[in-house]
Image 1 (tube, rainbow, N blue to C red):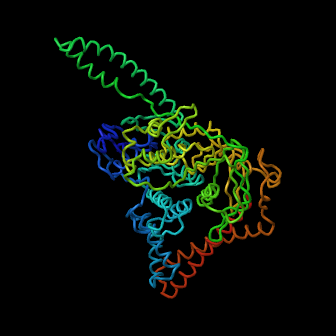
Image 2 (spheres, rainbow, N blue to C red; image 1 turned 90 degrees about the vertical axis):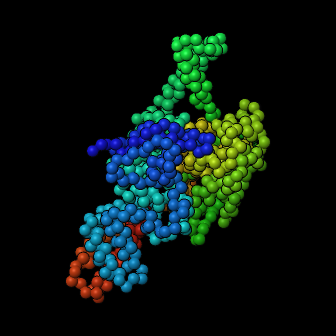
Length: 630
């Protein structure tokens, strides 16, 4: 059997006058883990949609190996879905998937006591699980759902946020057991812990992958190959991200040299053509035909036209930002608890923590979009905040791109004193005049994000507040943004799940922990990971003595370690969980017996339900004690 999963031959796609790609030729072989990269608007998502069978091509052919199973994660999934989460998770109708679905539904019915047929239904579901040897698979599904924080599989899709829909669709792709996964920005909406878990799942799996991603650490940790969609062509690189950048630079230098050579030769041949307007012989006609080919090569645009970000910063005074004992709660849950910090000139601070912990809430309070329950935020008089949000104001689809920038200002002054008009400013960053006067709706997701970022910079802020600025931005734009922020003289506060980006631009962290506690740490994300790793290795006595270098005094004492009573409780819970596990297996075996009458089956089912509920409670308490123990 061939190792080729997909073969793409002479593939072409255009939208109106815009040619995304033509005559693409490449293949995906069994076991490959490929990152598909390229500039925003180059056609990556469209190419993946064509390969997934979700969009037709204009010409060419996509061939699949016989019996190949494929799962596709769109960039914005489940937009028109009306079912429940369980419908999405088990949409593939295999006996194994159906067995797990029936078992989960029977368990849910048993827990709610809404179905008078519950005992028979549960016993039949358990028997079906046994026949399909599905218990290991069910445990894997539970792990995936738990890691992605998907708790209620009967929740309606319509009630979910965009980020929650992405996690559900990702979970469905992971549990599908498909031969090939096509994943479009799988790390968007995941916190750093989830991303690291996903890296382990994908890198250790033997499944074949094609992933659109702008997360460089993720690419390095998961992918074996990089395919770049550039200038309507696929360029292949076997290796990591640094290797890709190195070889790309070499290729661009070679193209630049070839372009210069072609242009010099074109000038000479153009003079000959002007002197010899008519071909008088076979040799002359051949030279004229060669001239036409040369002309096409010589008149292509330069390899790199997009420039680095640039802005003239406003002066910032001595008093910048004071956060004084702020607290914030929602529905009785403390998000921020008595947090204080005073910004100094040049501070570049990153915020990390799990999804939903309150990172964006802190940004909203600092930018005066939300009031704290107590405490206050004081801004210096010279501070000019530029706030880049995850969800910018919605633009009308027919709004012209140039008008969005002109709303902020008609012109901008760069750091070198040069003043650019709004149109020149967009052109400066690779959005040409032809695209500036098109409708906003025609931009790709990444181009919309770039436009939003340029709108923020257009106001010349001296304090940048950025919420997930790298989402949907192509890698080259990310590199330019990093370079700009590394040299930025103003202050910075940034939330990002992009670990490479955080390592590059911040030198201090706000780490969201449990119960609204925000820990301050001097260093970038990798420094913090190393610190946490060392802390786990140390004895409790060492942990109490050693503190991170140059750490600021904390606002509260460290949480105490386990008391003697809690250690005893933890040991008792571990023993009880082992007993409950054995009891669950025994009951499942009894439920499979065919000689049980209805009363006995009802009694055993109720006992089984109690065991599951107690297991959940004990596991939650064990996790609390384990976290406190460190």
